[in-house]
Length: 182
Ligand SMILES: Nc1nc2c(c(=O)[nH]1)N(C=O)[C@@H](CNc1ccc(C(=O)N[C@@H](CCC(=O)O)C(=O)O)cc1)CN2
Ligand SMILES: Nc1ncnc2c1ncn2[C@@H]1O[C@H](COP(=O)(O)OP(=O)(O)OP(=O)(O)O)[C@@H](O)[C@H]1O
Image 1 (cartoon, rainbow, N blue to C red):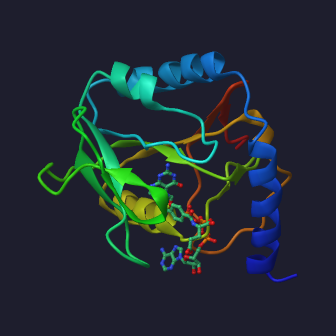
Image 2: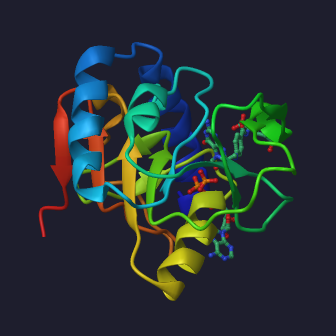
């Protein structure tokens, strides 16, 4: 199977597994722990949809600026806008994001939504390549920490990879914090 077809099949499998969810309180505690060393940094969170774990309590507890992703168009990197609790506007693909009046921000640490991950911290998303493009751009400019957030049931055996795939630095689940085995 070519990697794109294989990814599509794995995406369907992981999205089905994700509906089982997990221990939300444990996930929140693990995420706060992972964010502790990043106090003072600009944090990108996300607005959860479709069974994704909810990063918002940990975002609210973050000691520093918080921003949310905006999809500016097809096949381009995400933008980020500062969010201080203002009402959001509806974006493409069912997303919600801060209005144009919120200043743009450059995140130093990102909570990254995902469909599936593996033990090497490969990530499979919805297939738009948005976070791959975005992390590639941010990493070319300076150090960033990409924290994947998932229910433990979203882990799959080694995922197929493409040259453009960006690895996560850690994955937080309701069962703990995973780092690449090295
Ligand atoms: N909560 C959340 N926000 C996010 C993402 C995400 O995965 N989760 N993104 C992560 O990149 C970006 C938005 N990108 C997205 C890309 C595709 C789909 C999606 O639902 N795609 C449909 C197919 C749509 C189509 O191509 O017409 C699907 O998978 O069924 C959602 C978000 C930024 N914000
Ligand atoms: N840095 C990049 N430059 C050009 N194209 C890219 C880049 N990153 C990803 N793509 C393209 O995006 C498409 C989707 O990639 P992939 O299936 O890896 O997405 P994903 O990681 O599942 O999605 P997402 O990051 O949006 O959650 C592919 O067709 C790929 O060629």
